[in-house]
Length: 475
Image (cartoon, rainbow, N blue to C red):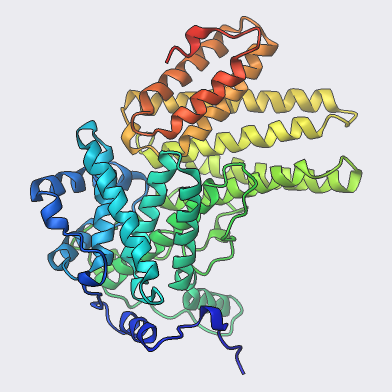
C-alpha cells in the first residue's frame, strides 16, 4: 500500500480538493477576483502605460530569462478579469518594465507591492491549491529576480524557495519523466522510443514549463552566491533542458519542432554540443557554479590530510575538465547575446574561485610554489577574459539585458586584479583593467542595483592597503 500523504500537508477541506481538481481538469479554471483584495489593474494603469511596460519587459529581462511566451501571454490578457494569477503575473511583468526607466518609479513600487500582496493573499486563501498555476510560478520567479537586483536578500531567498516548492508541487521536475524512462528502456534494448506526436501549441506550452522550471533551478544555484546556503534542487531532474529558441514563434509548424535538448547530465562531464540553446547553456553553467560553490564550502571544512586532499583534487579536476569542455564548445557563440556573454563570464569566474581555492589548499604541498604560480596564472587569465567580456556588453550597451549575477563575475575579476596590484605595485595593466571594471559597474548600477554591493566590497578590499587610491572609486 502506498504511503499516505502527511496530514499536515494534505488537502484537508472539501473546498481545497475542489480547487485542486478544477486546476487539474481544466485549463480555464479560475478564482473570482473578488475572493482576493480588489485590485483593478485596468483602472490603476492606463492601457498605453501597460503596453509600454510590457514592451520594456520583453526588451529587457526576457532577453536573459525567457520564461514567458509573449504571444501566449498577450492572448491570455483578453480574459484577465477573474484570473488573479494572471493579474499577478501582469503586475510582475510591469514591475520589471517600470524598472527600465526613472520615469516610472512610483509605478514600479506600486506594481511590486501589488504582486507580493496577491501572492501572499493567495497562499492564505483556503489551502492555496487554486493558485497552483504556471502564471503564479512565473510571477514568483520575476519577483525573486527583482528582489535579488535590489538586494532584498531575505525576501529574495524566500521568494526563490517559494518558486522552487511551487514548481515541485506542480511536478515540473517530472515533466519529461516518461520520455526519460523510454530512452532508458531503449538503451537497455527492452523497448523502442515512442514517436514524437505533439501539436505546436502543446509543444510551446510544455517548453514554457521547462523554461520556468530551469529558471527556478538557475536562481536556486546563483542566489547561494558563496553564502553556504543549501540548494533545494539537485541535478537529478526528470525534465529536459530548454530546447531551441523558438518560444516566441507564432506560427510554428510540426516539422519545425526540435527534438528535446536532453537532460542536465547529458552535458556535464561530456563533450558539449555547440548547438544547445543559450538558455540551456545558462542552466548547465548554473549547475557547474553550484558544484564549484559546494566544492569551496567542503574545502573550507576539511584538513590537509592525504585522504581528504585526494578528494579535493578529484573534485577540482572534474570541475576544471567540465569548464574547459564547455568553454571550448561555446567559444564561437554569438558575442552580442547577453546569455552567451554571461555563460563565458561565469565559466571564467568558476576558474578564478577554483584556482584560488587550489592555491590555498596546496600550501602544505612540496610543490606549493609551482602550483601557486599555475593557479595565479589561471586566475589572471580568467580575470582578463571577464574584463574583455564586460567591455563587450558595455560597448554594445547591453546593461538592461544582462543577467544580474554577472556582477559577481566582475567582482571575482576585481578581486584578482586587486591581489595582483598588491603583489606587483605599479602594475599598469591591472590598474587599467580595474578602472574599466569599476567604470562598467558604475554605468550598470542603474539597471542592476546589485552592482553597488560589489562596488562597496571592492572599495573595502582597497582601503587600508598601500595601493588605495580614492580616484579609483570616486562614486
